[in-house]
Length: 217
Ligand code: PRP
Image (tube, rainbow, N blue to C red):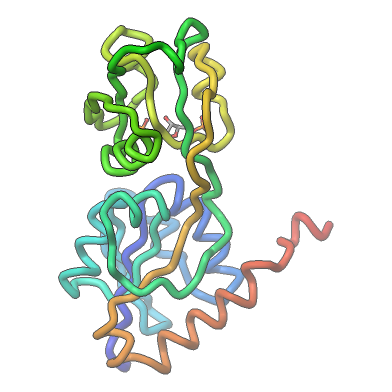
């Protein structure tokens, strides 16, 4: 078999939404589907290796050449100032960056606000553009806890279905920017495996805007 194309795929929600897309594009994902606790898979039938990693680590693997292709949310790419070459918007993982807080939050109150977020850079840029000086607290997960516990006045986070905000009685005060899952490539890898990578991207591009069999039924 020719040298494998190493694809770093973001574990979790991105993985769940991207696997059907890869399969519709003719890529065998059966090993990833039955992964249990394994993290790396060599396809038995195709020249692909799948690496399952957390979003920020997908960008690190790409930057260091440990992966050729990355599949990762644009939230991560922007926050980590990724310089990797983006080849395709996969059109899944669509969500929004929002400013959110409890009902009693006053976005216009003349005080220095404390903002909890997993995305300090994006948050800083947002408030800089508004000329507002804020204190940013980096939170690793369940960011919604920050205004509920009094740790922060508000949060900047991504929301997809809105369920987490709703179920925690939080509301949206502003929309920052949309997010979706992107296919990015290491430039050296693109030079080395140009034909194979473009072929894969073309296969995916062909299905990105196609309705699924469920939608057609
Ligand atoms: C993300 C985000 C919200 C949630 C929003 O967290 O930080 O908490 O999803 O999704 P929803 O609008 O569909 O409810 P994630 O599930 O990635 O986990 P985390 O809270 O541990 O970061």
